[in-house]
Image 1 (cartoon, rainbow, N blue to C red):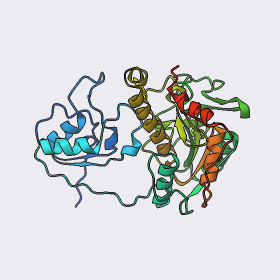
Image 2 (image 1 turned 120 degrees about the horizontal axis):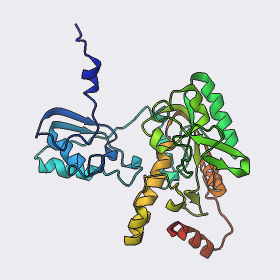
Image 3 (image 1 turned 180 degrees about the vertical axis):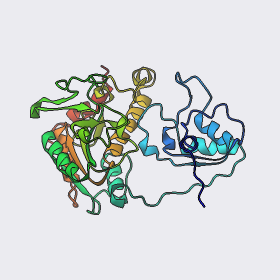
Image 4 (image 1 turned 90 degrees about the vertical axis):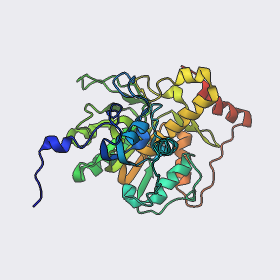
Length: 336
């Protein structure tokens, strides 16, 4: 006979990662950490408690399991990494077993699509530079209104389609209920949309189809179809992908501290920001189980994605002089 457990008992099985800094050694038999790449260093409301969340979890449990994908780090505060797990395990004289998740159900199980994304966004060179198996629907559209219409049509099936966007527009409607005020505005196409009004029901509420999710409200969620608006924090200069942290919204805290980091170490700051911005779009573009539609603010990036959909990919070439391309590549160093 199966035991009946109260809701409070079940709820107690799930904890945030920042509650183990006062735990005794081996207090728990097993701790399972999902999204381990999002582990922080300090804990507490003011990030002033504990030493390192990875270290504290390993210390608190006899057996720790970490699910980690460093390509899904989307904030400067994301501190979880494989090397720390290994180092802290060795400090505790624990054995380490590393396993790779060979396949997954995300994106129709299309590992090829995810590898293609890594190559397209220049996150890593993969064997899928020339495309992926087409049991996954991917489309680049020229107008954000078309993207919204596609998602609205798909959402009629079972309320499992949503628009998401890069965090390049300030969240001015947060805490407000004025339906005439919008956050995302693309004047060229008379496109207006607001960020999601609720962090808890946006993914399932019927009227949420009229709202756009950002990385902070959509990471960890999955839909049948996702429409991604790629903002001007990432573009294509004719040769490569360029990221620009100065184009992020001021209300976005994922790059909080990047200006100070830039003043102290320009090269490192650009590297950190580049990874976070690319990881953000990789994550957004993998929220759809059955398909992903994309609109790019940068027209060159839009052309580049269309070309990359061609199995016999040939790089998009533009007639700008080398010095102009080099200047474009340096534009992301400008501070607001």
